[in-house]
Image (cartoon, rainbow, N blue to C red):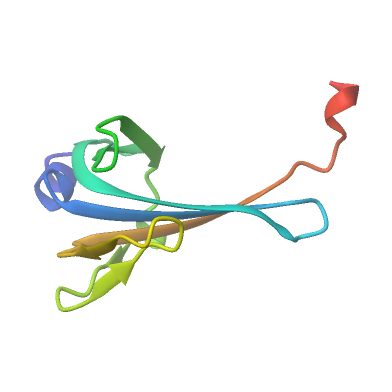
Length: 103
């Protein structure tokens, strides 16, 4: 656990999330960034730079890449230029196959 904390705590984190409809068309794309404030073997929590809220994602080491220290990442939704990114994680979320009205 201490290794995770040493590796991630305080680091600048960029997350991209793509939500897909049942037909695989894109419903929504979101991008957030901020500093990691907590990490465990199951979760990463970071404080979003845009609104100060905490946001968490599952910890998945295979889905975390090192950021390019020389790169500038332009967020599509806001046009914000994000620099000095330590880690990046991207997620694709599929709509469940069942109909919501049947819940």
